[in-house]
Image (cartoon, rainbow, N blue to C red):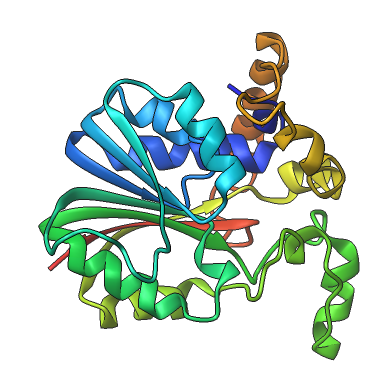
Amino acid sequence: MSLKTLAPSYLNRLRTAIENAGSGRKALNIGCGDGEYDLHLSKRFESITGLDINRRDLSIAVQNRKKNSRYLLADGRRIPFRDRAFDCVICIDVLEHTEDYRRIISEIHRVLRKGSRLVISVPSREYPFTYDPLNFLLKPFGRHAPIGIWGFGHLRLYRDSEFRRELEKAGFRVEKTEYLNHYLAGLCENYLSTLFQGTAKAGNGSRRPGSPPKFLVKLVGLLLRLDNKLFKNSRTSIGLLIRAKKV
């Protein structure tokens, strides 16, 4: 676990994505970053391939990789593998960073075997006021500031119904939609993830910063359980995670 797991939205997204990925033979992680997801996926799949365009993040992933993991400097819009090469594709908070996000969805469909699984997440347009009050207030005016939900280089946010339609048009059948992190998690995180992102990702170029104390991760887990219990029927969330199958 890295320092990023102290952010409720990150920890919940990580746990939910791994759970929905299931297990199998060959998995592809598009936008793998520093490879933290792959440390978990490597226990579930025979082989893991991670793609990213960030050389520094990839160098950390390579240094810390498991034996059944490999990494490539590559763009998700041009995945360097043959058709139907993978049993599962994971794509976590990537599409919002590129104008040509439909091309990535098309490429994912191409490299997946029929009936295989896609686990994909994006930031939600219907986010809680407590997470980003400034941009929430700017929303009616069609404006936003590059912080909070619009931080980290995001070009767009997604409505759940529109995003599901995009996947269905590309040849997927949506099996499950999860609404990740509601009002309580948003209040506790607020703008902290924006402020501390650099610290959480910083390292010596080959390794992640040290892991946080386990009791702090457990406290974040308790917060998430309470947040999910209080707002279990709410579709207002920081993120959307969808599990779908190629048809």
